[in-house]
Length: 76
Image 1 (cartoon, rainbow, N blue to C red):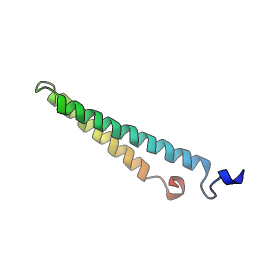
Image 2: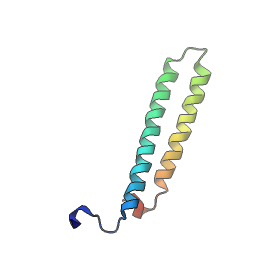
Image 3: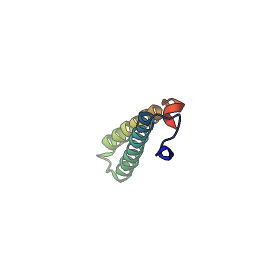
Image 4: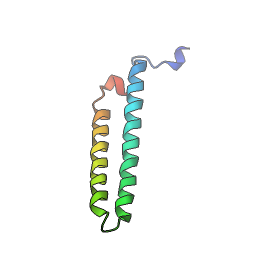
């Protein structure tokens, strides 16, 4: 079963990368959802929708940074 194992990359490293990538994708999807909500917001809702959009952008940036911070051995 050695064909299933990537030498030099520990299993937990792949798990960390997969989790970080999934978190980033979810955050990116949320950005898109919040953008759509902002586009469709009424003038009364626009300030709240914009704040939610900015929060989603911050979360996406944090998820991207967490993904980038993985060591190369963990990101493979």
